Amino acid sequence: MGEETENPKLHKSAPPSMTEAQFLSWKTRKDLEAAARKEEAAKKRAEDIAAGAVQMNGRELFLREPWVFDNNLY
Image (cartoon, rainbow, N blue to C red; front, side, top):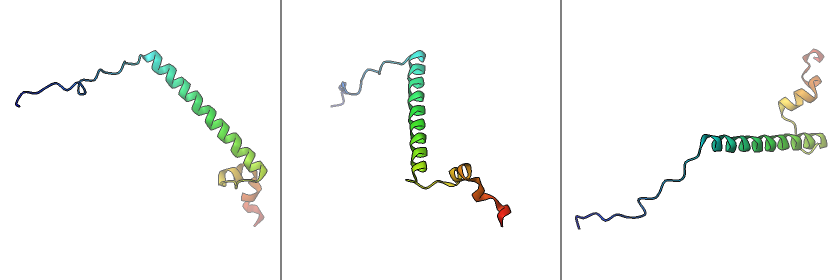
């Protein structure tokens, strides 16, 4: 009973390490995918705003219709 038996589940082999070149390749690919998703979302948002499907937030309203914020009219 005092004797410890080796459990094969506790001695798992370490996953293969990743080289710096592999990491940089993976990171570049992920960054490009994220940029493409962000660009697509921005394009869809602009199309929805132009169609009147969604309301503009304050920044979008200021950039598209700055006359709304002109205080000289009051």
